[in-house]
Length: 132
Length: 132
DNA sequence: CTGGATCCTCCCGGATACTG
DNA sequence: CAGTATCCGGGAGGATCCAG
Image: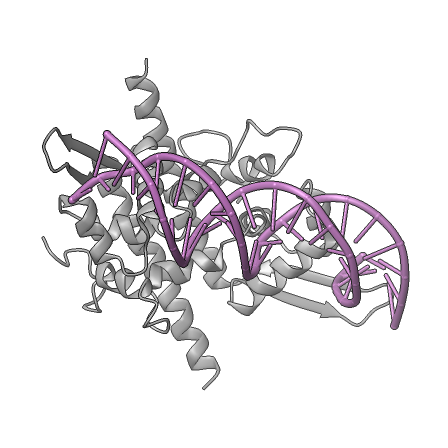
């Protein structure tokens, strides 16, 4: 069964993960860790899911995501843009108008996240049954 | 396209995510956020991937995961056990012997994580091509 | 409207020493 | 061998005010 989950003949993610934890090899980080880092942080997921299929402006996002501050929204959007998950379209108008949307890569991430959510909900259901 | 990603007719994860961010509704957290929390932390992923299909003892894990301390290994294993991802089997022997392995739920998580890793690696490949 | 700059708090995780 | 106990620093994220 070893390496049965390897992707396209690359180094087995299992080994890659272990390398990723090696402080002597910080450059060889696991691809799963890399992917998780892209959506890490308190507000990335709400942003991704709020965007969904839509094109949304800054203050719309702020309204749709209760509790987020301008600073956290700005920095989260910036990081998501830098790793290619969202598009940022700025119009030179007064007052300013900036529109955010998911890239194709961002759109392709959504079903995977829903798989993960479904996995978690099944797990909780099982636990609830065991606990009565 | 709305709700096109809904899981089994449940509330659309998009709405669930936004509820999850609502400080007035802390109990209604998004299933994706819940799932991500289960594997959150610096050492959860290395542990899961090191276990893989194997049954591994405490100090074996410690050796296989460079940099981890006993304390972080203990607490991470505990959290993973509590949410049903790993099994803990303790034998009453001297010296002590405790074996850890993935539960069925834990095993079913691995392919999803590899999907995520594959998604991330594709995204990076695309970016590299764009940047030359 | 779309952010930036500053200050502050909390807690994750590291270091070290100890135990049944 | 398989953990505990304690102390501590750094960074993520919140609050508030400011700006083009």
